[in-house]
Image (cartoon, rainbow, N blue to C red):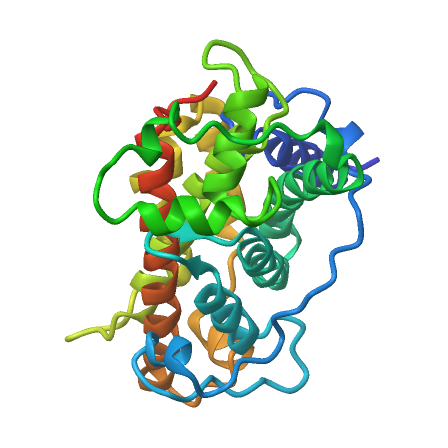
Length: 308
C-alpha cells in the first residue's frame, strides 16, 4: 500500500471514529444494540395552507426540489408540525425533521455524512423506546404530574399537561420526560439509554445546524461570501465544540474541510441565487428556533441540560 493510500485510510478511520464520538464528546456505549428500530410511518409529508403554515412567514409551503433526496419543503413541513399545545413538541414530526436533516448532511459528502450516522442512531433509540412502550402499554407508568417540576402551576403549562396526558408515553417531549422520570429511566449521575438523554444530544446538534443554516442564509454586504466550510466550522465552535474533547474538535475540522462550495447549496434546494437561498433557509431557521426553544424550556425545567 502506497503512502497516499495509507494516509487516506488513516483519515477514513479517524472520521469513522469521529462519527461514534460526535454528539457526546466521548464514546457513547453500546448504541449498536439500538440500531434495530421500528419502521417509522411518516404522516407529515403534506401540509395544507393553514395557520400552521402561516407561522413560517407566509401561507405557502415550499415546493419540492426534483432530483434531490433532501427536500427542504419536507423539512419545513415537519418542523411546523412539531410544536403543540403551548410549549410542547410532538416527537413524531420532530424525529421526521431529523430524518430530513440526516439526508441534508449525507448530501454534503461522505465525510460530513459520517456524522449523520451517529445522529440517525439516536433517533432510532427514541423510536425503539416508543415502540416498546406502545407494545407494552400495561408497563407504562402514568406520569404523576403533581410531582414534576415542569408542570407546576405556572401559567401557560396547563394545556401542555392535559394535552400530553391524553397521548402515549412518547407522544411528545414533555410526555416522554414525565414518563421517564416516573419510571426511573433517567439517571442524573451516569449514562443511561433514556430518551431524555438521547434527546439532549439531538438538541445540541440542532442548535449547531440552526446556526450553520442561519449563517449560510446571510447575504454578504460587501466582498466575497465566506465558504460554507468556514461558516459550519464557526457554528460548530459556538455550539457543539463546548461538549467535545480536544480530539473530537480536531477531527471535526477535517470533516468540515471537505464541505461543498456555496453553489452546491443552490442546487440542493433549487435556488437560483443567494436571495432565494436566504428566503428558504430563513424560514427553516425560524421554524427550528420554535422547536429548539420549546425543547430547551422542557429540558431546563426538569434539570436535564447536563445529563451525562
